[in-house]
Image (cartoon, rainbow, N blue to C red; front, side, top):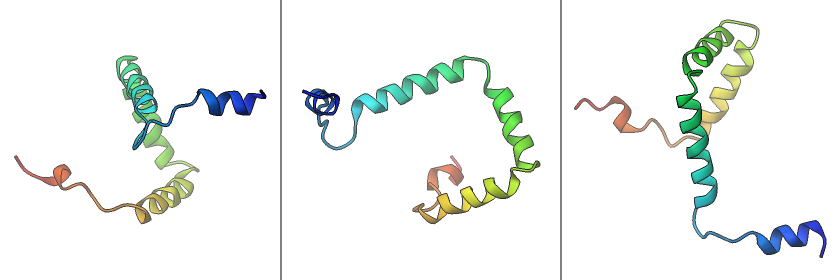
Amino acid sequence: MDDKQKTAASAQNEGEGNKTAARQYNDEQKRFAQSGKVEEKAREAELALDGPEKDALQRAEEAGKRHSAGEDPAVTRKN
């Protein structure tokens, strides 16, 4: 059996959604949040928006918004 067949045979279809990938993503996000690098990365992002990457970042944002269903109402809802 070659590598592709081994991967396909060992990979399970988890149905709708991929719980394994979601768990890995959540673990990585938690690890990053606890790393103490959030403020540093936020400053880097802010500087990028004012630097030579500005146009590329704006195009990427526009492309993402074209695929969006709109803003989540919970973002602007007042409690």
